[in-house]
Length: 153
Image (cartoon, rainbow, N blue to C red; front, side, top):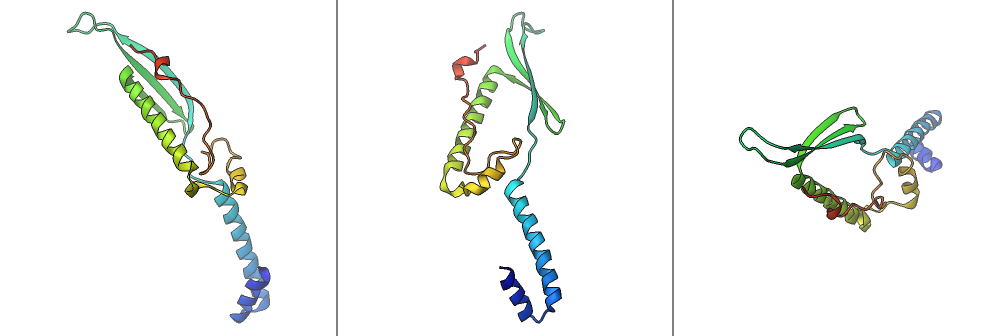
């Protein structure tokens, strides 16, 4: 490949010393691009900590007995951003279902031939545990608890 590029540069009437310098610059740039493309991808913050609690509203000013639970979630992300959510038990079930459905759709898409990577690239993209799995690589098989495992309030 080097000889081919140098011959093309000579055909353009570029001095051989200058052609050699141009080739070296091109080769270094190509190596940097290849190594960066194989490993790096979009990096999004990941969850560093999850804190939760269940609050039960016993009564309000208008009703003497309510007994309505709500779940308070506090997510701390890797970029030190803290998000707090308060949801009802029904909303938590809906969220859990939607996340499970999205994960299933992602697995289906990634298992399609369109997203498969050559084996040599798969090994490089899984070197960093904070990166998402490369397209074509299966997601970790961590089963979600059945809906019955989350208590209904």
